[in-house]
Image (tube, rainbow, N blue to C red):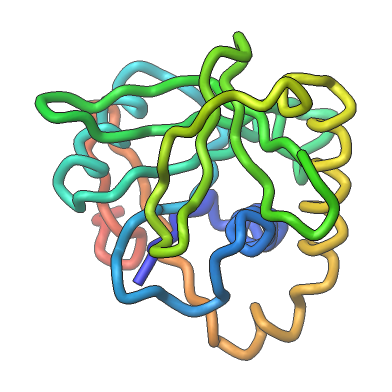
Length: 183
């Protein structure tokens, strides 16, 4: 099962699920726990360290939306990818990209040098960069697809078929499930 950590806001939860669906993954968990989807409102080194630690411990790559623009609290300002390597965890700023009609979204790095997609097993894989994925129009189309999908997920989110685990990050970067965190 793929996990999702959100900032606790329904719009963030819907966005995480919408990105998951638009990347070609099913609503419900897969047999391989491959990718975590989540959202945070502020980026600090301890939070990034906590996310990296959690990715390593859970053996899952992660895609996080950052909701740092107060003017648009329900729209991600940007995304980052957390991916495991042989002896470390790397993080890179990415953009969801629409490369073809009726095809899953891909992620392209901010500098346009790397591209990632979920494979048929639900595992995040690096692939050759498609020039189309680096274009601003591909990013804008992806944002529209994610928003349209997120706006149509009320039934799924309300049904409980797709549950999110909400984490709080302590100042030292330790992640604790909100319902287990001490006040």
